[in-house]
Each structure stands twice: as structure tokens, then as C-alpha cells.
Amino acid sequence: MTQAPAPDAAGYGGASLPAGVTARFVEGVNGLRMHVLEAGGGAGRPLLLLLHGFPELAWSWRKVMPALAEGGFHVVAPDQRGYGLTTGWADGYDTDLRPFGMLGLVRDAVGLVAALGHDRAAAVIGHDFGSPVAAWAALLRPDIFRAAALMSAPFGGPPDLPEAGRGAGAAVGAPPSGGGLAEALADLPQPRKHYQHYYATRDADADMRNAPQGLHAFLRAYYHVKSADWPGNQPHALADWSAVELAQLPTYYVMDLARTMAETVAPQMPSPAQVAACTWLTEADLAVYAECFAATGFQGGLNWYRAAQAPAIVTEQQLFAGRGIEVPACYIAGAADWGIYQSPGALERMEQAGCRRFLGRHLVPNAGHWVQQEQPDATARLLLAFLAEAGTA
Image 1 (cartoon, helix red, strand yellow):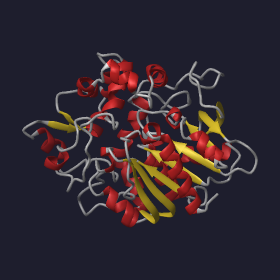
Image 2 (cartoon, rainbow, N blue to C red):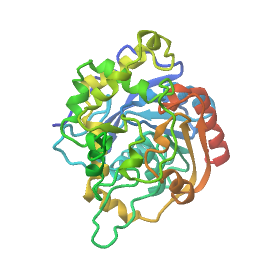
Image 3 (cartoon, rainbow, N blue to C red):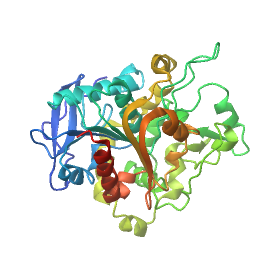
Image 4 (cartoon, rainbow, N blue to C red):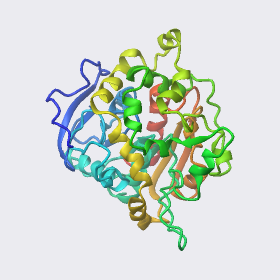
């Protein structure tokens, strides 16, 4: 099934965008009608492309866009394929996953740059699952994407070529598809499962879209438990991909075997007083996410996780084994973000081989996974300092 055309009015319903940030649709982007937020447009300004993750939207960048525009940039954040008000992507579980793989998503980014009237971007900046998209964009098209800022999800490089007889494996950052990891997690004294394996199941979309506590409450708990507001987030490095090591991750990453994601986060639902005190994500802010995901569901975003584990797509990515990002790159994450370490070894691989001109790792205090929403001012300062050092404007 292909989505119906979006209404002509751009923006997220009655949501208020920050001063200087506008919304519109961009036609003809690799088959998509792409909804974007935009700031600092004008002739001659270098482009910054901001790529969101899961379960997010261009809306997640609203707080950093004005500062980046004031820094002299044309700042554009799209609802990516599978998300929000962008249309033209194939919905549902039984669909071709190739457009949701890294090469397809980079093709979307290249198409958007061209449709915006630019021939290059000063930088591509990605958060969460947008981070590997940004990394692959810079790796594959350094002539277009002149720098890359990777946030929350480290990029360890393309998947290695398989050893003889071992098969395609999985992309770096995705849980190994072989080697019995799922079975080993299920055999733990507290049986567990990896969230990316769960996200690849047919039931995951309905579990979250039709969460027993309601979609808005589900998203509130999900955002809360991965933020610095939840005291359980005390991240540290893991030794390897073994089940025993992975079991140290919170259950929103390595879930209890019998629970859905909605059931996993429900016990951590913040109190009314905590919700009222959450200035980085007000109830009105959260309503934008809830309304969009109520309309589209989560399957478009979940198909990214499925593509990352699809042997045929991973095999295609192995063509680039051994390559690293040659343009200037940096890494930014919240200090309380388990995403830094959820893929054992990825952080080290990023700094040693994945990024050949690595300009630094920055862990932002008082921020968890949603760093550009929890601490937008600090995030914007770090990005502007990186762009100045990279000298790509």
C-alpha cells in the first residue's frame, strides 16, 4: 500500500514552530513528497541537512535550528522515508525493504539536496538511526556531504566481508543475526531479547500503535526512560556482544523476552508532576509525535531496522568494507545515553577507522538519548564549533 497524498498545508497541525523555522513540502525527492522544516534560507548560504531517528520527526530538531541558522546556514530537517507528513513510501510489513536500507536512504538525502537547489551540503547531521544515514551519506558521497556530525549512534564502518562459509551477518551497529545471540539471550536466567530483533517482527507496529496505555502515554514513557530524567541511565562500555554483557543494558534495549515495548516502558511512566516539570518535551510537544504516529503507525521506521538485518541488503553494503568517512566528522551524545555503548566496539571503531578525519567526541551533561531536545543550546554550540573547525561552509 502506498500512502495517500498529504494535505497541502505544511507543518504539524496547530503546533507552534520556533521563530524563524517554517515548514513546507519538497516535491520529487526520489519518489517522495518530502515534508521539511527549514530555517535560514537565502541565496549563497551553505546547507545543513539534519536527519532524525526513531521514533522521531523533523520536529526533533526544532530547538537547534534557529541557532544554526543564525550561524549563517540554510538549515533543513526532513521527515524521512517512513515518517510524518512525507509521502510516497510503501507502507506495511510486506514491502520491498531496499528503499529503507542505507543506500536507499542516502539516495533520498542526495535527492533532497538537489531538490533544494544545492549541489552540496556543508554538513549532514544525524541523530539515532539518522546517524548511520549521515555516516553513509558522507562515506558514499563526500563530494556532496562535506562533513558529518554523528549523534548518539556511533558509526563503526561498513559491514566486514564474511569469513568463508559464515554468511552475510549484519551491519555494524545491528545485533549479529548469526551465532545464536537470540537463543543465548532467551536462555539467560532472566530471559531477554534484543529490541532490534523485536522491531523486526510483524507485531511490533501494532504493539506500539495500539499500546494498552494509549499512544501518547506510551511515547511519554519511552522518551522519559531514555532521557537523563530517568535515574537508571548510568551507561558504561560493554566488553562484547555476548548475552551476559548485553544483559547489562536497560530493558528498553535488551527487553524481557515475554514483553512488548509498550509493556517494557509502562512501569517507568513519569508522574504528573514529572511530566509538568519536563520543559524539554511538553505535552504539546509530545502531541506532535503522538498525532503523527497515530496517523502513519511505526512500520515505516521499523522497516529501517528490518533492512539493517536483511542479508541481501547487508551483502550489498559489504562492497564498501574497509572504507571510512574521509570528510571531517565528530560525535555528540548525551552523557546519560546508553546508545553510546549499545553496540559493543562501535565507538572505538568509529574513532580508529570509521572516521578518518575525526575531530572529537563530545558527551553533553544532563542529557540522555534525546540530546538535541534535552540540551539544544549545548548541542547547537558543539555543532557550530565543529562546523568552524571543519571549515566546509
